[in-house]
Every structure is written in structure tokens, then in C-alpha cells.
Image (cartoon, rainbow, N blue to C red; front, side):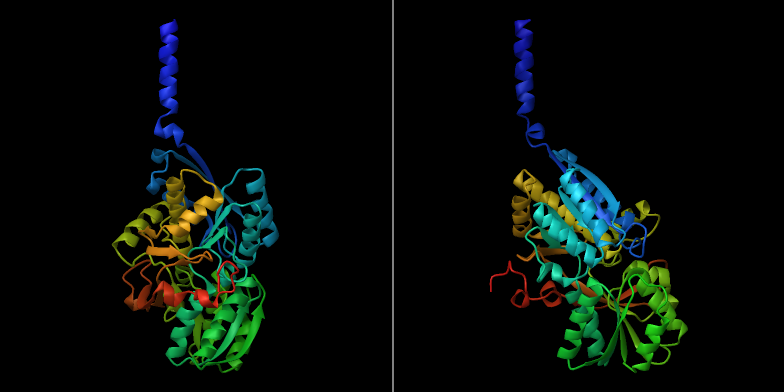
Length: 401
């Protein structure tokens, strides 16, 4: 019996010392987004699928990292998002939150994440304030922001002769930031902003606002909105014959899910800026085909691609640091170059801004499309340094001037 006990004790000690057990780390990631409203198609369940794909592709279990994914609907309301974030951090053991479209919700969740010393990797929200005056050592802004959209779409439209603008702006943090950043690009390039109107968020009837935009005689009507609001604006503009009258629509934040909902007949000619397009190269095509099989045939938006990319980089940092301490993991994430099949190579700045190329696209005419989801033709590429706000202009307190 003694010999058996000694052997058992020795075997247990050897097992405890094995790399798998010694490095067993449990990570709980929460995907917080719109699962039922106007941003559900571009984020929603698709972002959860993308997160699961990141865990699978990283082979987390084989590396001694157990990852649990949870999700919730913030309904595009800051109070709802804040309540969920606090419960996740305080009671449910969530280590990081992913996605969070709707800038007002994202700003609130970023603040709570800082208070609780956790990590937020934001893919869905647009406001550049997340890495500007509202920056946090606990937040990374991954996929796009209003500054990059303004540089891409706004800059391209002015260069093409669209030197007078009228803005239709969703009346909350994202719309305000997008209008602000695009107005700066337009005026810097010698253009003029003739007027602006704030629209309810979310909205359904944009007719009176479109008539104001039409009456302004501006060459470009800048749509500082997104998702269902953008879709309704473009449809109603078409009904009023606005583009037929010579004015151009600038979809300042247009997702592939919006183009799919509109159809090429209505969306053709829209100029837009994205950080990801499923049909860009062999790697993006292969990943997107896998995603579509899990998402009812729908191709991924850049937001969903960003959730995948952000979680993948986080898991690399957890593996490298052999733990999940927020400050340690965040420091490693900023130290390590980013690289994946979605965005290629990139980096993360001190203010939490993730750098990668941004792409300027034009929506194809129906005759140019070869089939479903073949919607974009590339006009230009903006490097991360060109697209995102220079640190020298940043209001982020983390940036040493």
C-alpha cells in the first residue's frame, strides 16, 4: 500500500508540474453589441461567431487557455450597456469586453472598464474620442474611427470636386464626431459646409431633413449616420430624386451589410471607407467563406472582422505573458506587432489606436457585379499613418507632448 501511495503521489506531482496544468488560464470574453436593432446586421450574432472563430484558430485549448464567450444586447442605450458591463465585471468574472457599437455606449463602457481595471477591445463604435480626449489605458480602438472615415470618404469627395457640403447627422456621440472630423477635412481642403441638420437616433422618416439638404444646393450630402439610419436615408433620397438632380451622397460610414440591404441599384456609386472587405485577397476570401457558412451565408462586416482580429491578438498576449492581468496583457498587446489574415500587419499606439490600412471603395453598378456580395471596387489605399489621427494632434492624456 505504501508503495502504491508513493507512486500515486509522485504521479500527481508530475501531473501538477506538467505545462498544461501549470499554465491553465481561464478567460471570459463578453461580446456586447446590438442584437436586435439597427446595428444587429453589422455586429450582432456575427460578432459572436467571429469571436468563436478566433478562439478556434488560436487553438486556445491546446495552449492551456480555456476561453468562454458570453454575449448580450445593449440595445444602443448607454444605461443598458453600462449595467451589463458592471454585472459582467463585478459578478460574472468577465475579463474583457469586445465589439460595443454605438459610440455613446462605447464611451460609457470604456470608463467602467478603466474603473474595474479590465480590457475593452472596441470594434463597433466610431467616435475618435475613444483614443482622443476620452482615451483610456484599458481600451483599444481596433477597426475604424470617425477620423479615418473623414480622411477617406471626405477627402476623396472634395478632391473629386465636391467642395460644398450639407450634413445629415445622427444626433448622438458618433454622428457628432463624424460630422466634426469630416467638416475639418472638407474645410482644410478648401471646401465649405453650407449647413447641417441633426436627425433623431434611431430614425425612420428622413424626408424633411433630405428636403433641407436638397434645398441647400450643396454638391455633397454627408450622411453622418449608419446601419438602418443610413439605409433609410439612401432609399428616401432615391425616392426624392436627389442624386438624379446632381447632388452626391457621401455614406460616411457604410458597411457591406448596408449595401446588401439597399441593393446595387440604390447603392451604386456610393463612395465609402472600410478597413476590411471580404473579397480583398485570398486570405480574406478564405476566412470570409468559413464565416459565411456559420452566419447564414452572410459575409462579414469590418466590425465582425475586427472582433476576430482583436480577440486573436489578446490571446497571443495572454499566451506570451502566461496570465490575464489587465495591465500586463495590455502592455504586451501594445508592444507586439499585430498580424492576422484579416488586416495583415499593424501596431497599437500608446493611446490605444490600432493602426492598419484603410481602403476607399466605390459601390459597383449592377452590371459590374459578378454575383452576391460582389459589391466594391477599390479606389485607393490609405496607410494607417495617413488614415488615423497623428499622435501630435491627439488630445489623449496618455500621449506625452
